[in-house]
Length: 334
Image (cartoon, rainbow, N blue to C red):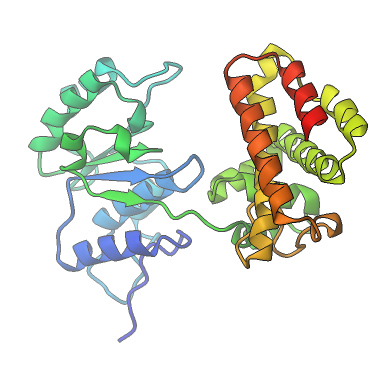
């Protein structure tokens, strides 16, 4: 008998599939899951798939995918139409506070409208205050049998241990840049190659983020180009050209975060030169295109020295040293 297809709409994430498939086969599920991953990693998609699978009208038929995607229950949940899927959001606030969790407690014992279960999607759970987490803990300890919680977060370690002990942590898979490149190529006919490579390498392994960067990442593309050019000039040892280029970068106080990203990307590029010589995976340059010709004969010691200087420059900017002074010093001493 062929193995049942679980979550056909979700790429990769084999561990998540195995965990839920085992629970489904045993006729059980947790009453809460922590879904951890960077923005765009598919946390919301996974939550909706688990919710749909738990109510799928064909869930007892092993010949059908899980969720089937075609029954009334699946269509409502996957289409965002179910009144039994409740989202808890922090809105424009920096944290998720007790007030938002209070709304959960107020509605917790209201029975589902459409099916046997209802679901709470708690967004940015890693930004819950300690007070909010303690308030939620009471609901996680003894929820009604029809309630399933999804805590969507970037870093599960920021949740209280008491929260994590009551909900299995499922980490969304991070994809390698070369896989993301191929995935983007399949979604965008005749893609802009430079833009595609940039999106794939800046997405932190998240497919959704890669798609967003490809569509709207103009600033990210410019940062990537600036980092690439900075590395080329540093490796060439052209101090006057490096100084002139550095002076044209975003150097205002409001641009500190952006300048630090450029320096971080430059470190990634230099790290790739070392990795390439040792048979490692590329993070900045495209695995398909390989290193630029000028980078292939650079000594490893030179790369390591420049990586250290770029890291110091990032630290200086983070310590509020004037960005123009930092870049002038970097150009003069590289």
